[in-house]
Structures are given as structure tokens and as C-alpha cells.
Length: 124
Length: 111
Image 1: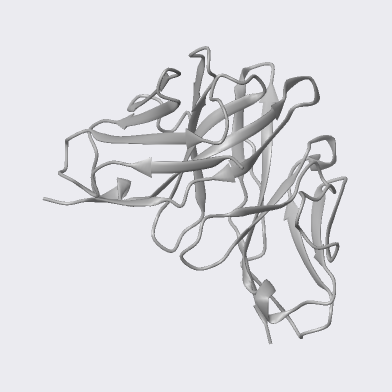
Image 2 (image 1 turned 135 degrees about the vertical axis):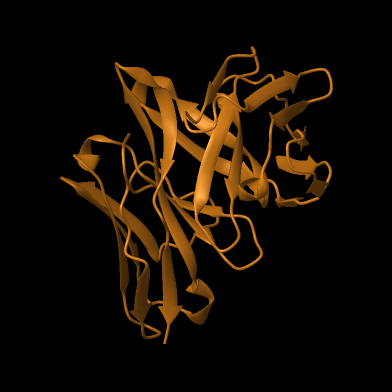
């Protein structure tokens, strides 16, 4: 059974960089067919896709966040990470990591495993 | 960018059938996935690729997709089905990299 667990600071100051790590267990992050993803949810709001990374290092980001987002992968630790720079109060949200099951030729990508989520508050 | 439109809320009596829609331009040409999210919990995949169910999801959950509307149908609704439901697609076109789109979510209330 694949499990994902987010970790990182729960409080970040405005203008600083938010950094989170997702540790994957029960499966290898180097397995093909998966896009390792970050998704967030503002309090009381819907889901917002941030971006994803393939184990090879290829990344794809939400255009609305692209200028501030970096997603990286460490296959040796079976982890992938999120960095979001120049944060403001508007970045306060629950951040989820998730496994994106992808079938490129059929244009299919869905999230079959999710972490429990971690609340990150941006405040001084 | 591609937009998915869901009704903010749907109400249904126990034992009845709930239908939650997800509208999008020619969404029938895309693969649609549905998630259930209960308060304080992470989303759970309940339908993928329009109408397939992951292991462990009851047969009461089904999906369809045609034209400009995809639908999640929950038969014989139970109190435990009360949750927020989100649709999602992977939007790819020739003018931008493929990216993920979520609908705004629908709150299902069991009366």
C-alpha cells in the first residue's frame, strides 16, 4: 500500500519561501507511470493543482504559480519537494502531496494516493 | 484555460439517488475523475476515467460523460456519503503543456 506523508514548517513569514517534503513509502518514486504532485486547498475552498514532477526530473507547473514554484525529486530518499517563494497570506492553505497515475497516450491523469495534508499558515 | 463548473450544493434524501454534474466545453472528449472529501480529510478517488471505480469503492458510485457534461451518480445514498465532491480532468492541447484542472466542488447534503 502506497503512503505519502508531507512534512515541513506549519508557519512561514510573508515574503519567505515555503518548503515542504513528501516522503513516499510502499512504492518506489522511480516507478514509471506516475507524476508526483502537489495540490493545495485554501481554507473552506476547493482544490488547486500546484504542479508535478516525473522521477526523471521533468516538471509541470500551474501557470498561475509558475513564477514562484519549484518542485524537485530525490529518488535516493524516495521523496519529492515543493518550494514556493515570496509567500503572502494568500498562500495559507492545506498542502497535499499526491501520486498522479498517468496514461499519456490516453490523456489520463488522476490522483490515486494522497497524503493527509499539512496546514501552512503565512503570518508574521 | 479550461474551466469545470459544478453546482455548489446538492441535497438528497437517504436511499435516493444523487447526481452531481461537472460541466466543461466538450468534456465528453476528456477523461473525467471524481473525488470525495470529508471534513478534515484528504480527498479520495471514487471514480476515474469517466466511469471506473477504484478497488474498495462501492458499486453505488458510478460515472458518465458525454457532450458538455460529466455526471457522478450515487445510488441508494447513505448518511456517510455526505461530503464535498470534485471533478478533475487533465487538459492538454497543442498550445500549452498538459495541466490539471479541478471543478469548484459540490457539497452533497443527505437530508
